[in-house]
Length: 199
Image (cartoon, rainbow, N blue to C red; front, side, top):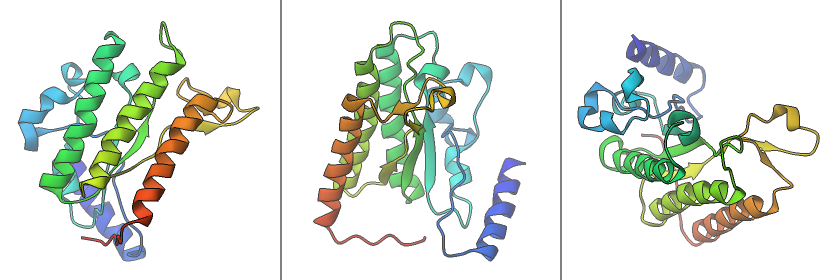
């Protein structure tokens, strides 16, 4: 059912506008096409999961997307266990996008909740750095990991919008981490001749 819908909608959107890149917006869960990867899924005990590989192989899909919320997905695990999961999750998706899908993968949502017990700002910095370092490593080696979009940037007066994962512009240490990633990507990309194209 889900594959038929993705096929129909991807083809339809492409008839309306074939000049923009199209992605599905998946969490990144693995399914039956990669049974050996299902154990990586964070909610496997509850039977959740689409099929990251199969759905991203649909015609007219231009890049893959992945989300990651270890605090929500692994509520009963330690922070070290969540970070271990995150590193595996990010690197496995980069490898699969590089080796199997042959398409870029973007980490379109990720975050660290400040509402978990014993939260410290350094925990959020560590999570961001883990994602950023994996993606940067992929980019510099010509891999499929191509970018990130954290959830969500807020400013003064927007506290009511915060779901615990919000990044406030006043958080200078985390903003510094974000700026560092942006700067090193800009520096690397300006030194290369790159051209993205549709499959």
